[in-house]
Amino acid sequence: MRRPLLSGLLLSLGLGCASSRIPNTDVPDTSENRDIIAFCERYRRAVETRDARALIAMASPRYFEDGGTPDGSDDYGLDGLQRLLTAWADEVNEVRYEIRYRRIGVSESDTRRLNVEFTYTGSYTLRRPAEVEPERPRPGPARPAPHLTIDPVRGSERSQQGEDVWFRRVADNRLELEREGDTIRIVSGM
Image (tube, rainbow, N blue to C red; front, side, top):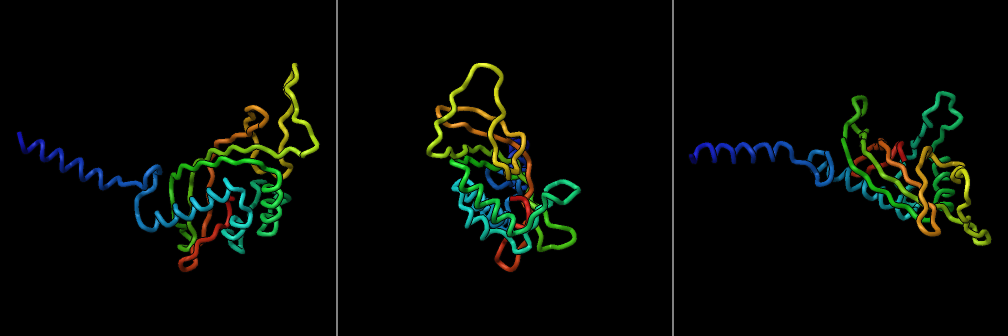
């Protein structure tokens, strides 16, 4: 009777060690992965506090976004990111940004490059100019939700709570990072 109990206990302990994950992630628990998640959490907090300076400081001088279209008209580098984040910080009132980390991988072509795949839930409200009265709901068909003209989040859901209009999106994303010594910088994905 003791042998099956002991075998079962040892087997469950062995499986527990083999599947050790960083809490609240799907990422294996290693010191390198903890460092990367800690960096990404600093990024997440900077998004929530709308700290454009901190986000720019986290970006690589080689930062580049291709915009996801073949024509290149929506591509931008570090200067474009700075303009985008400055306008975003001015136009967005409040942000909630949650991340569920799925995977961390090393680039096959450059071992200094890392990919952090995650699912995010992002919610934000937009600022209203001081002289404009909040819009009251009107009967009839809903009008399109206002949006930042530079907002990369398309297809956001809109909900109203009191005077604030919240926009929410759940999506997958990937931060591409590069490591130079002890420094980590974001190459794309902000």
